[in-house]
Length: 543
Image 1: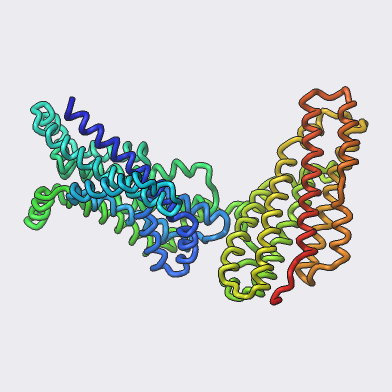
Image 2: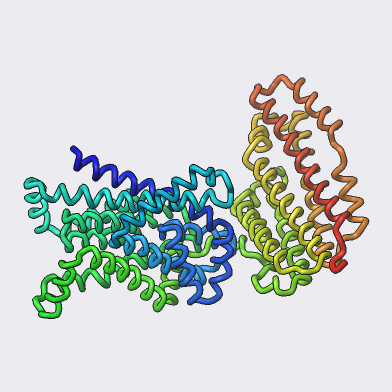
């Protein structure tokens, strides 16, 4: 029981360490890591280096894949630029496996002591040290778990019954392939499974061949895991996942047949190579894992163009993705801040123009031809793209007047996101829900229709004013008209709510929906007014 306890405790500490490392290092990287990724992709070599660094930090190629997917979805990356990041992240994950074969017991004890001292001194309460200390604790627990598993495994290996089981299993090394794939589907990390396998090999519980097959299976299982998690993705996002799956499969397809050939061919060189591997199995397995990731990354880097073509054919670009592509913004524009400011105005005016189009599906005469479709999500993605662009523009701007303009555009971008959110709530919620139960000739449908038409007219007027501003600069007349249209509506809304309260044909739920509809209308008017006030107060560039 003591031996089993040592193994289970070691495995538990290992998984706790993995979780701590992943969560805290991601926080340490955070926005800076994403910005580094976005900027590094212009150079394939630098992209590969950043991809490997990202894999080493997160210790999860799956996590990097889905971070890159999210960045691609909002237009920060193209699929072509994302390929080096994704495939070389696999190489970065090999750091953990390589460290697992080194005797770090003494270093782990010192690290645990230093981390405990940091917690005793309450350094974990300081934002500057919290995630660094958490990462150190995760690393210490992970490798302390490895030490425990090695110790427990060495004692377990000496038991006669275990020796018999291992001798039987040694004749079926392919079982390790299936086991490696299955465990990776559960653990969501081929590096994690490989480290455990290396540890058991060091303890003598697995032969070199068994562990090698576990590593091969883990790599394939990692690809299958990413593919399963991406079932709801389409377009470019799906293409990136398919390229990651192709990288995992390529490494196994190239190296596994060679390994099987090496097992069956009795050449002196091969015998010597296998003898060296048997003498130091844990180091050989760690190198095999590294080689597997390198072959995958190199193959996809060399065959990137045809691989991209096949991925694009398997997952063509979606309508939402096409609409999410900025019309005016591009990365190099930040080098000329004054021009970039005008490009942001044009992009924001274009996004604002989507609002009345989205609202068309609630207007009886417009029918369902517009609908929500992909336009709402695409507009949200464009707002996110503007936000990132404005952040980069603020870093590149030296003029005080331009900085104030950029800050004003950031406020407008935030309001634009809130407008999209509110219109989305209208499309999904009360306005649509209460239209059906009301009789066509009743008073309430007329009032509800008037609300929608009034809102639509306000949004069209604002969109036209923003179009003119983007081309010629804002006019005082436009601002005056918008301020008048977006004036206080509280009295008319109170009157409408009183009429709703007197309506006996509606259920309690329908009454609540009507109240919610009026609240959303008021919010739209209020947001448009705030947006207009920002037009009125906009600073002059260069001042």
